[in-house]
Image 1 (cartoon, helix red, strand yellow):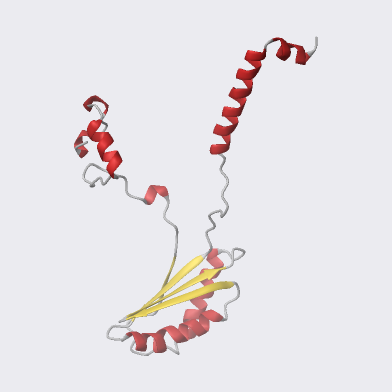
Image 2 (cartoon, one colour):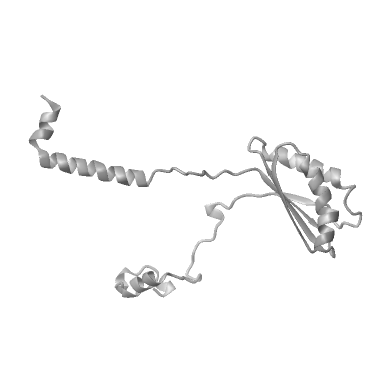
Length: 174
């Protein structure tokens, strides 16, 4: 029996099968998990230093500059940015993907120790570093009835026009 004969004898079934395959292909294409720029978590460490009473200029020259010089010679450092404000200095270090975060932490600690003699002696506490992590969906807050709900105009109209039995959150007032 010839396979094409079945499709030739039943053109309506063949057309319906073709439409079903086309629609399932469109649906499958829509749910493909492809990203042009995938999410990459670079090993990132932030170093914070507090110096009460220091102006932003003093923080930049006395605290941030010596730390940046020490951090700049670390291998695998891709990007370094700093922010000096009144009484505080924050240096953000981003490392290469090939460097493990634990190794980067050890290098940062060694650079902080090397910069200790370059920092002011009346610094109340040494610079503190911590890992920078991206928030996960579990760490984000969940919406609750106590949170206000702001909707665009057409959605507000739809909710008001919708029958009451189809409304989902009576506690939100819609």
